[in-house]
Length: 193
Image (cartoon, rainbow, N blue to C red; front, side):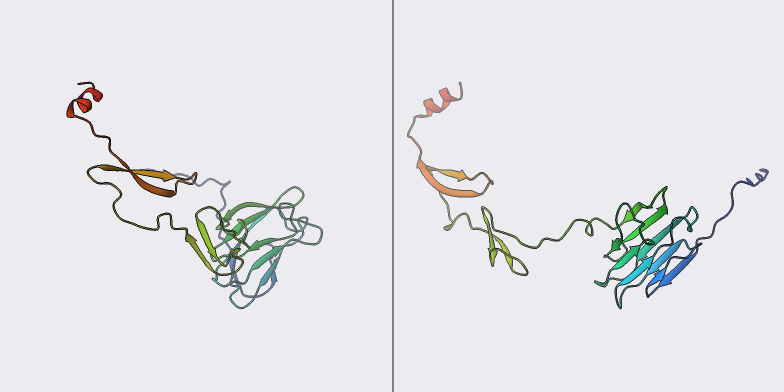
């Protein structure tokens, strides 16, 4: 029978303290996780001063799918990674923020790819691409310019297709060229036989 290992006195069990938030608030000392529902309106989460915060970490997660944002703001004259705020815009987007030597530090973020990637505000058509309207600034259609206007075969028993592409790899021209008459011996000699 295996002997039970003695408990390590240096390990103290920790239970995460989680709070659901539906309005502007301050993250209080001792809270570990804020689950923020901004479904009704934008919400601001205030952080305590880093001097009053004790060495600690807090996780803030936006749990709704609305277009409302969650803005995390440190105490006056303090920053999060050099910024006056940190914004969550997407459902299930979360950030872990901890006290650093001189400011709050975002040590990990979940779901930030789209949020930090920026917003496209205008598109202009390029080679082979059509936009309606052009430039496209709000809503419209993106399409591929047709490269061949008439389909159908371009070769037969006496002709081979001649195909031309542009720098983007789009088909720009198709024609046919006559196959030069030759004897079977010409083909065999061309193959080295």
